[in-house]
Length: 282
Image (cartoon, rainbow, N blue to C red; front, side, top):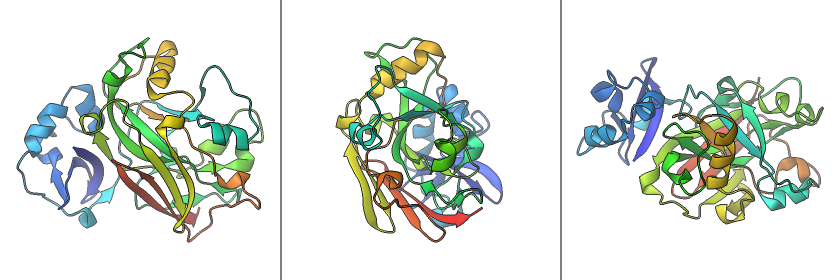
């Protein structure tokens, strides 16, 4: 099942995406689950499946404005330097524990919306990543049971303002300018992608492939990330883990490649879909 958050008639909604359009789950079960985060928190995935089963789409995709998959996540964890080729291109040492930083919801846009290059910098870089959406609460989760906590998968562009990111040893500013990240277009539920499935991730800028790798090359695996994060803070339904970007980022090319207004950037994860955004000036 593909689940998306969107605006229709300026009203936040969510629904199941099919090849023909969107089945409006908000209308069917929204009284109990007002948004996707609430749906996950209250164990409503099975009810969502039943509510959408056999239904014809209520809307076409072109009739809605997509929102970030989880518009109101409690926590967004981003993992740095989690593919060895990206670690090496930046000349970083391998660390025993994952490098973790956070993003805020206000720094994200959705599929089809412009990512904004801030006026303070033109060093705006792409980072294609695979996002995990947490489906149930847990603390000190073992790697052996970690897959049970994954509700689904999505695409992510961890757009980075490189000079602000590298101005200090802390990356928060360069990773959180408004509307510089993108999350979508939807969530594919975990029952569609069995645990341990090798996923292929690629990034295209104006149709040219800039990044390609698979989850086989993650330094810290998905179960390891879930176990590590949940050791120091409880994970909750709707939390998002952005699992890292492979080599090929614009900052490490010669000459560097920066995203500019009018560019089109696409993040593709097989078995999930394509996240597409244009670039505009803030």
